[in-house]
Amino acid sequence: MKIYIITSVLSKYLSIALLLFTFTLGAQEKFIVVLDAGHGGKDHGAARTYPEIGYVAEKDVTLNVALAVGRMLEKHKDFKVIYTRKTDVYPTLTERTNLANRSKADLFLSIHVNANQKTSPYGTETYVQGPDQNRTNLEVAKAENDVIFLDAQDRQTFGSYDPSSPESLIALKIQQSRYLEGSLILGGFIEGNFANKDKRLSRGVKQMNLHVLRMNAMPSVLIEVGFVSNYDEAHYLASSKGQAEISESIYEAVISYKKAYDRKSGGGRIVESKPAVVEEQPLKNDFRILLMSSPSKYVPGDPALKGLNYILTIKEGNLYKYYYANTNMASVRDRNIKTARDAGFKNATSIGFTPDQKLASGYYTIEIYAGKDRLASSSPILKAVSDKAVRTKVGGVFYYTYGTAKTLEEAIAIMKDLEKKGLKNLVIQKVVK
Image 1 (cartoon, rainbow, N blue to C red):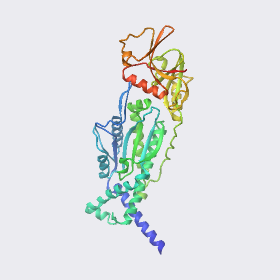
Image 2 (image 1 turned 30 degrees about the vertical axis):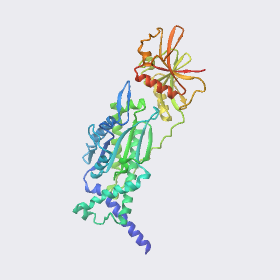
Image 3 (image 1 turned 180 degrees about the vertical axis):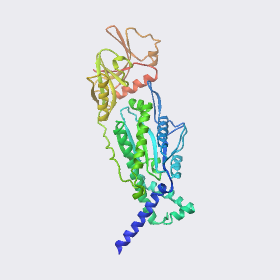
Image 4 (image 1 turned 90 degrees about the vertical axis):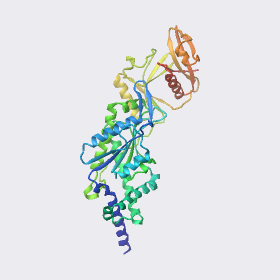
């Protein structure tokens, strides 16, 4: 008898949960997707400026991608797309989630661009509700389902739902777990497309306590479509080709997610899913691709560099060493080697650099000029460094260097500061004592 009672009550809980979870699907004719373009207006989000690309701002990339995804979804009659913004404005985080909740959306996708202090991080990642935010998310789900009692027809339809009852609380918890399940599956579709279709590095599906995930009463994901702090990826994010590929991968993930519903038998229960992408672990070292060593100094755009960008030149002794790209991910390192060899550097090889490693002896400095003519004291180059350059003459060539650093990262930072002052064709010189 006791077993029968427990089974009966559990059945009641599941019935209420099913009723709540299928409300959006059953009460509305269209599958509602809310697309949230991160940041906007005065909030530019993550941004970088590159000489060859210009200013790349997160708010612009996310808006372009969101609008493109929406245009593709709107071609399907069974979809309704709602945008948190369609222009360069800034809705608050609360306004974004309130819009999704009021709309009784089936999915919420927030699109963002990543950044890091280092230039090596690379790839995509998708976030879902974190394990430490379940209580807050449960309260949101409860509050959103309380509106059922505001309409007479809804009261009749949901006559068995009482938000204050223990049965309904358990039902909401079941509903909440389905939100997380749906988020994880959608995230798997998205990252799977990035990795398998676009051949990009996927960092996987992760959980994090983020407002736009915590405060939504529906499956929700936050997509980081790439790192603007990485030169190659910033170029990809800013390009029409890159934005088109990103948009198509997200669009196809939403289509796959919707197809995964078995509405007849499960009322919104997902019955198939693709395996989540395994997160690649970063390597201990950074890897740059050594293209060549030469006594000649080549500047960006020189034909000798075969069209490759983001070249770091390090002078050791009388040789200039030309390194392409930088990453701490094995898959990206291997892809960079292939890119270099395809460009014509058949002997290109990867060289490991220990991050923030200090030289045991000697130092790094920045070569700001090399030429047969001695610089005048009025030279803009010398003025940019406040006449603190060190001049040497070797074999009839004048060399001017500036600054000292114990690590390569410090030297790169000095070089970037000089570039901001207008100096060009700079080279890091390794001085060994």
